[in-house]
Image (cartoon, rainbow, N blue to C red):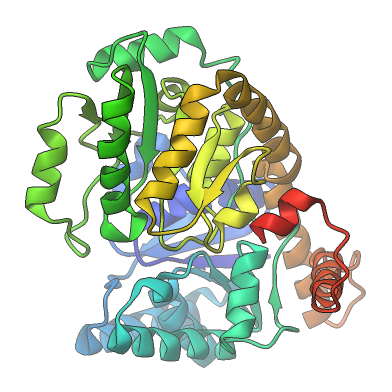
Length: 424
């Protein structure tokens, strides 16, 4: 089996599909990866085990450069002649699906990892809608990282329901539950990280992990923090992430956060995350849009409950009231109220943390997600070659179950647990 993964930037390969690539290579597959230059920045995390090719792909629309990128992708795919091409991110999906179609790649899979379209203005939304529809139309299979994203994609008419699937319970790459283990990274890791960033050992720490951009709800987090810091003098806020030039924050806004002696920044990308989670008591993700937030799953694996917003992706990663809390998006008061509840109820935090690790281990482990993807590849390839599939495609039971659930909800009969009905 010869497989090509296409992404706009190399960090997508390392942060989203590295384990899948290594699993496939370990099974004897010939794996190629294509992304923009810069992969050497991430080789400290280990070699992917793939044959890597560089094609510059801009994340934003640049028609002249995009045509050149498309030509280079097509020429490269013609040379590699893969059985399967698999793209991640909207821009790579758009260009990659066109190039793979022109190159005659028989199995073309487009994974929808998120919904940036939900946060765009009218014209950007229109362009993204067209590119998303085109990528889905040219793909032979569309995979969504969560069931709520699948519902949005089908409801927005980007893709027919029969072509659009979610593997298992979802997941872009799953969580390495042996790496993200609170028994391995315990008190010593917690103390080391707190000392590194100037956080008192006895402080209660609320942590945000992710890109520091407006779409992640940083403005709402800052407003909620202003409410919380007055009520709880022992509370600290840790921001672990980096700013982006393509989606800049207001400099004055950032400076106000940096001048607060109780707000701590990691100020850079952190290669090894489990110790950072170990330093937290509560995780927050006030995002405006997600696909399936790995931060929530990783925090859960480390027994840290998360307060997140009621948007697609987050509602799949949290069981409201059981593994964390879900609040209305763009509502600082609701965010502050939920965090305050967890601050004031340490037993509830501990109970949610235990439930979160069990939930993540059972549904979103790295081994499970990679195994489902390999099974899907084998099924699709067997069908293409005209042979008998080794088993029923892994996504069909989930798709059918979801269809039955949606039908039940529409008819007014919903037998799901109350916590899931509330989050969905």
